[in-house]
Length: 191
Image (cartoon, rainbow, N blue to C red; front, top):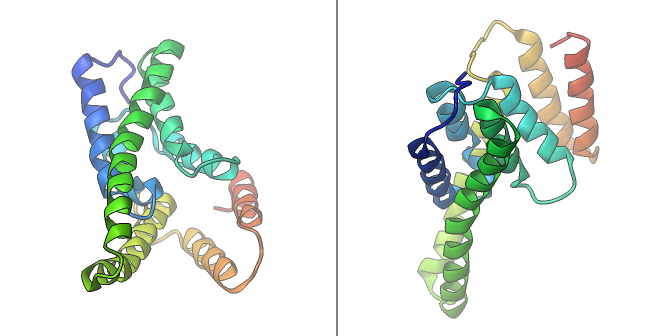
């Protein structure tokens, strides 16, 4: 992990990467977490696997918008690079990068699609995006489950993932209970 300060080009790269992901975040920013992990943890080494997973878990369990995990990732990148002032810079760079392009595009696309809602192509596009969003969410779950250390030998992790998916799919149990159970199992070293 890089502990030295980030250069101006590094901050620009971070902004451009998140701005690009913003335009690809069909279904929300959470769908782009596999590439965020690749970029921040594997390629740049600006965050660790535990920091990455914790950023998502904390933000998802807190009330508020789903995209808050990006702020925590930017915070961690800045904190690792040089302390509190750079943590604030990382938070701002990541959030502006992820929010500005997608909100601008969503605003313009919503105005256009509302004006053209009766066109067959517009209706087909909306229906065709559903499987893409589901696939991106599955990829996100895969990255969060395995991290950068893929192991098909850890049967307990796979069993926990399958049981969690089944519970969420087939019951009305609130997701926070499932997250809490997973956290407790991790705390006690079961997974």
